[in-house]
Image 1 (cartoon, protein in one colour):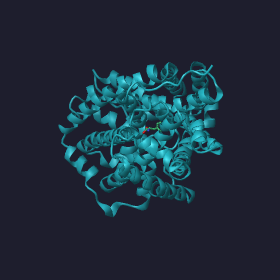
Image 2 (tube, rainbow, N blue to C red):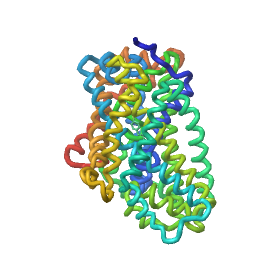
Image 3 (cartoon, helix red, strand yellow):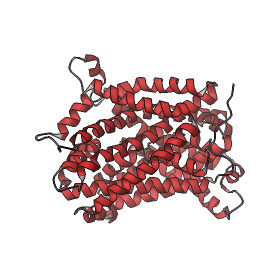
Image 4 (cartoon, rainbow, N blue to C red):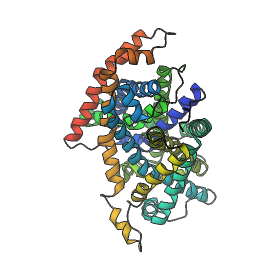
Length: 463
Ligand code: PFF
């Protein structure tokens, strides 16, 4: 039996859910690191331009396709453009599946670091602890990795099982304000640290001589990941928008909040790093290192972060909440496809999809080295592990090609009337805005995304 399609209870509920999808490890884990690698300033400015010029128009396109058709990504593209476009939708579902399989593993680490930092709250970091070694040991500990990622997967499944209103929207309404609160607290305390001026200068003072064509493409590539674009997550969330809600305002709000949170997180992290004078070491530990090696150390280092031992567990709560509101959107893409296209009920579909993804999460969880006595794990360890392969494929190929297809669908294949009726609701002078959007979705966005795809084809790696 087909259940009636659920809708967000309100505009705020929808914006919070979509913002929850957008804000995630991309904001807290990837963005600060690539900003560091690309020397801040000019890179951040280019990133802001990419978000406004490419991210925002594609966000509007995905949401409008979802709302118009009231279907999850495969059915939505078939309905909006034509039967063959179902394959583009299926590409998105596959991407959600793969991305979720490894995203959960990093999300699981936040649980581990939460527990450890709570343990250190009273007595501080035990003497002689090397956080680099600790990270290596935890990520190579197979039973621990499986437990953490299973825990995170179960939480994700439980929320998606409850559905759009009682699950996804309710969790977003509850968690996002907590997330904003924690971030604000961390930001205020970072202003009390001596490195904050230097950090802000690094992030916001552009020095264009440092900017390379690669950094421009990296900024562009990241704008897909951070806004959850290119794989139908926003098409799916858009399909739960009721007719009277404005897509334009909601898109602007989601994009703005996501960007703000990425910048605030970066200010906080860099302040801690500059205060401790750790600039030289940060680059060496890589993307994960900043979040799970440098920061925990600095939170507990004498004289760096005021009330650091208290703020450290809170920081990992922040990471976990941000990740959870993203993993639910990833699972929802896959689950809603099964519900809509295969006619399976939500409860059964959630278990099926969650279970299938978890099989691959096992591979990802076991990608970081071996545990003595568990020889099968060797199979997935090291550089060639599922984790790296999947991240490489998703960031370099799947999101940009999916995003490119969306620009073509909304800009070239759908009629002007079809898109205009979704974006202009008659109550506001939307004509000018619509035409600006149309130029961006037809020319600017495909050209920019095309450049990423070409450069990846020539060997550039954005993962
Ligand atoms: N936007 C998320 C982040 O920045 O971490 C990642 C993501 C979530 C991408 C959900 C795609 C998606 F459907």
